Length: 117
Length: 118
Image (cartoon, rainbow over all chains, first blue to last red; front, side, top):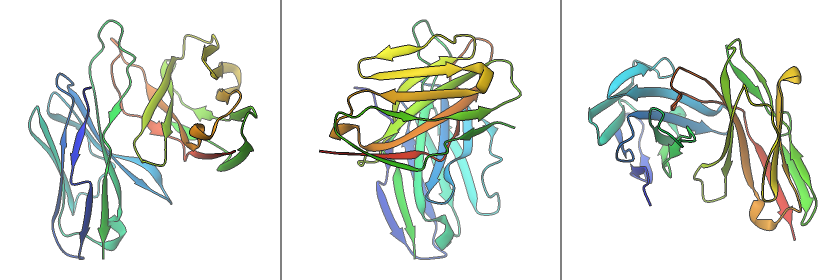
């Protein structure tokens, strides 16, 4: 079964530390999304890429967050410096341009749960 | 701007009851997609359905059915004869539809937590 793989699954860090989350999209998927889930805000889009090019990162605090796709098999989300308000579950999702029979769904990873103390 | 509203935040039912989850959306796009996702206690997001704005036919898949009404901007989801395994948070979502289809960014509702008790 093809899956989106995210690491780490859990991360506890102290305020001010750098955090890097990684995502391996499903092979052949050309669109990658980063979402953040919190109790207060729900699921928010942080950034997304198509064919490795950033399309929209307006949901991301630019001063401390950065998202990249060094290659087609890896997307990264970095927070530097981290703050307690960044505590959340970060989801990566991938999808692709339409093919016959595609449902157009986004396939989500299991999430990276970040706790910043 | 796109917006999805799930007015119910939490519902609790007894097994075998039918339950309907409401979803109302706002968009200026003439073509768009509507989705439902399920998030079980394990945390992953599971795709349930995508509906094109051109297609207002209701859809049934086993115990699940969806009622799309463009006139009221609603895309409601009904679970018939609910089971304990249906306990989860359910999200309604909206995306624009671009030429050729494919995956576009989703705007999610806040989710609705369903608890099905034995």
